[in-house]
Amino acid sequence: MQTTHLQEQKTALVHLHNHSDASLLDGLSRVPDIVERAKELGHEAIAITDHGNVFNAWSFYKEAKKKGIKPILGVEAYICNDIKEKNRKQNHITLLAKSYQGLRTINKLLTIANTEGFYYYPRIDPNILLEVNEDIIVLSGCLGGLWSQAVLRGDMQYAYDLAKKFREKFGDDFYIEIQDSGIEDQKITKPRLREIAADLGIKTVCSNDAHYSRPEDALTHEIILTNGQRRKLSDPVRGYDDFSGDDSLPTRWRFETPDYYLKSRQELASVYTGDELDNTVEVAEKCNVEFPKKTSHVPTFETPDGSTPFDYLRKMCWEGWKKLGLDDKVNVDEYKERMRKELADIEDGDLASYFLIVWDVCRYADIHGIGRGDGRGSAVGSLVSYTLFIHSCDPITYSLIWERFYNKARKGSMPDIDLDIETERREEVIEYVRRRYGENKVFQFITYDTYKLKNAIKDIGRVLGIPLDECQFISNCVPFKYKDFDDALAQSEDLRDYAKQYPELFRHVKRVENAKKAKSSHASAVLICDEDVITSGCIPLSYDAKNKKVVTGWDMYTLDDHGYLKLDVLGLKTVSVLDEVERIVNAN
Image (tube, rainbow, N blue to C red):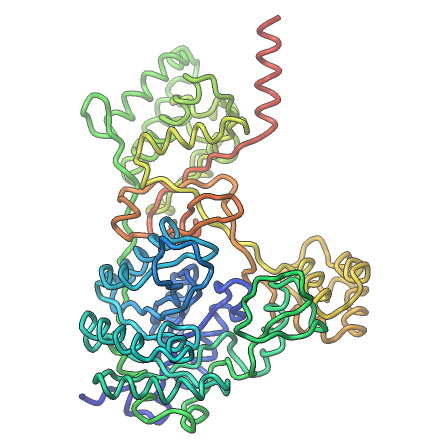
């Protein structure tokens, strides 16, 4: 193999198996922590492989590129024997994207895992992976992987047979993953996995399965892990492999050693071979994901008369103009000039389909007697929206400016029109959007809960055994508005006093601030895509178990960065009340 620039360095090592805070309540490190730690170690590339998701793929990609680090995008997928089986037992496998198409393959696999294979976890199985595998690299996984678990149960034949299948399918893009974090079971699996690799001509590669960036983060990581189990540090520890599911027992599990951090090559050299270290670089050299430049993914609105979206938009605007009697305005020239300007900006920004999609949704609600708001936010500064009856506020009469809503400096970014729908019939509107634009093209957005200071104090305080009422008193000292942890302390003398009284609590709170802790469905945002999400892999999907719905696997900020359409359909009780009052008045 030709020596690469990375391999010429004494520090040459690439961590290929790492968890960010997107491994919810298991990974501690936020994206900047991971990239900064790689810089400190002198590494030129690093991967993130979160549990069953790629939530942080785009933010990691941007941050790594900004800091001159090569981003390697992947996932530690959940894998079982057969996704049709309702069995909580699952294993892990590490997948890395070789290219942007490889990332789309991972997206497809995650979509299958969340739409077909979800049972407590989003699962795939070996047959799916052997079928859907374009441009990805497969590492055999951690101690919870298929091969390690087969070794531990003494089923070497299964491990050999499965390795042969993957070797035949993936060739040199299948590696046996070797891990050694000082766990007793790894002393059993490591020589056996090396034996399988040697017998079948498969290369081995090392990984450290990092769940936090630095060694001093080990206790903070244990705290968030314990919090996820709703336990306390004082509770007895059970075995790592005890997944009995009996939550009535006051026990918790933790990582057996404090070695799950990003290490230097020198730290790893004593437990891995030179080839296993060098092969991390070989894998990294194969991984070259480049996101494409931002392009519009707004579906083209299909006009009933076959005209272009812009021509149809202009036609509907002038029809609305006549219905509103704007020709009778004393300052009609001002209205005409404003209309020309807005239409010119809409044409220049290729926004006609967006306005027509919003108009179409509003029209559906009106036709079917679904209550909706009269318009709010900067959208009421649009005369086009007024003539389309998206809102009922005349922007000229009230001196509202178009540029507050949209201007050419925002070209390439969607404007934002909020649609307030009566709560009871919001789902009816979303269902219409699905029928209109395609079942596999319309999904609600994912959103994340993060550790803000108040809930971090209460969660971590509970884990540390601080009385709940005391945790509440401390959290009440957090200012209503603050920039970050240090700013909150600067503003509140009481909070500073508590920080002196509970230094351990505040050390961990500062470390977890703004880290992800849970996922959910966004209250209003709906994606309307120009591609079939499930078959194309353009974005990943995720299952929101709490609300029992499939949502996007990337948040609205990521998808906006890539030109996807976010339609805000918010269910408001206020609209329901006003609509009911109007009905009662009209009836009497």
